[in-house]
Image (cartoon, rainbow, N blue to C red; front, side, top):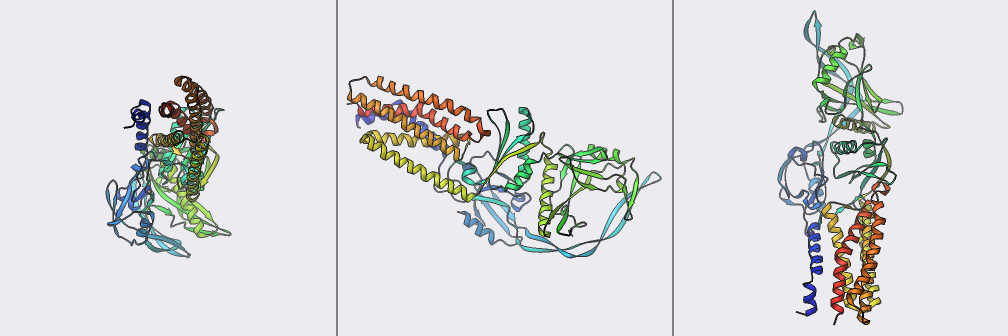
Length: 570
């Protein structure tokens, strides 16, 4: 073996660089033959959810996500294969899904669309009413005939399986919102809150987003140099309007009788919220009505109260009077529903509930639209949001939206392609300039290899800690690599000068590192404030820059200096 090469491969600094490089590649975990489609999210109450497929955890690494490999023994190698298979599904078809973690048996459901007609039909409804007759509770059945909007069910083939998928990841690199598309919302508490309250807000928001059917989310606290508190929410593939509406509301729900509260939203007072078609949806009694230039549709769903909330209702209703409306008896005070201190609905309380601790009640509300279809959509969206708030409860503080950004997946892919193109172009430019400057391969080639190693290590560290690489992070990588090239040029100049003049090698390298460390500490001090500035939006830039600078100064640049010294010494 060449003596110089042997000296290089046995040098501690060179071996340390190679060891760290191997660790970075392991963290990135590249695979150039990834098959299947990865599961991004699972719709609530879908065929996939019923079969036991769950939403992936937001913190799981990309290569650890569950991947669909085959369906009914047909290999799924791409997004096109998956979509082609879904298009061929029929009603009540059994689908055997094999994933990277397990096998599942799904059965497709019919895709039923309920269409309301402009005519009504008579519907007979029987209700059991309890009456107190001389201290004895007597149950009697009352039959009513109601005029309700006529509906028909239209079956449009089979429902989607409820899976949102994307091409299987080939690395553990987590792409940020800028590179994969989605919605970013920056929120600020209306008042300063403690660290414990901030953790409670973040936990509640994550639960809301999961209950609402959104996954692949990042919710974290942020701040700025003025001491302001923020919450940064990033959701891949989400609709901006529905996310803003869901996150901006404090979600303080309460139901009052008079000035007294019967129950609040949240698990303390509400033990169950129906979200299935048999006990939630458009109210068949109220239906949809055309009132001039707009349509109004009412929704309803069932909830179950805790025994304590039911007992409060019994105590608040036992002394109320009875009134008669449209030949029906109700209590003199309605159940008034408030959302964020605004009245959203009033429900008449049947006479049979007077003084009774009932746990099962119906919640209703409405939606509006220019057409009947728009009103139905708005009504069901309002119902879903209200159900979510009733399940998760209110946030401990009101949040204000500071800014929102929405990036389409197509634009994110364009950003990624442009970033790779600029990176390759920059690398080629550096190669040409370094070779023109020194005209020596043993100066230029180690410099380029060192820069590539630094790039891999920065990405590896980001993959290991689960940091999302976005546009600001890419800018930080470019800064770190550029600074590295500058430092290596300083080392090359000093060592080449040492080769010509009769100066001590160690003294020359020491002079070079004096300049390098001075620049490192200057850049490091400049990056620290950016960790907290701009509500955390510049955090990626600061982190990747600090990682690149630190690794370069402590590991790669000393190794590069040793390589230069070995190659130049006779």
